[in-house]
Image (cartoon, rainbow, N blue to C red; front, side, top):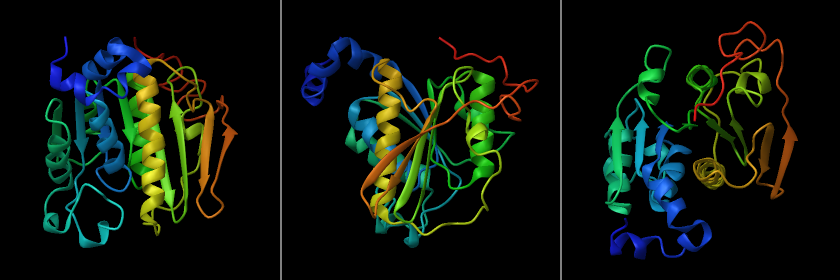
Length: 251
């Protein structure tokens, strides 16, 4: 049962998917890898929507150069851990949910433990080394992965459903150079909100996911296109003979 304050908070969205749907959001666990330009809007809108358990991991501290796009970090947060800074704002946005902040590096040794029992993993990282780690972690655990990336006015989003869709390495078999691209803040906001939208659809079991599709955002032309993304039998992460070949999404 929901308290009256919760019913008031979610009054404008409960008519869309009912109290049962809202209860599914409240029971859900989402792991967000990264509390930067993408992780901030993803976490903000999932918290506002009432996702009940949000775990945010980031190893970095807030820098003043982050403030043009990382909307949960403010000038007084410079020098603080990003995960802790983000968690503080999220708790203020919605005190009815549980926020866990982890100052941790996402790598092969830590990713499975960080993801834990999450229902969805969100890739809000800024490099493909970490993204491939999240992709492998999602495949092994059978947890859907929502990927996002940005550069300048451009961005991309896709949803990986283990055992059913192309994985991230199917789409990008060779990683681009690991370098910090220039980013316009609104691009991170738009792509982060598209990721949050995918997470909500996944948790509610509604709508058409960006599964087997890559959405490409061109902010200069204000165009969002989707490109088919097929599984590759020779994919190192999920193809024939790989560890993730037969992994199906867990119930």
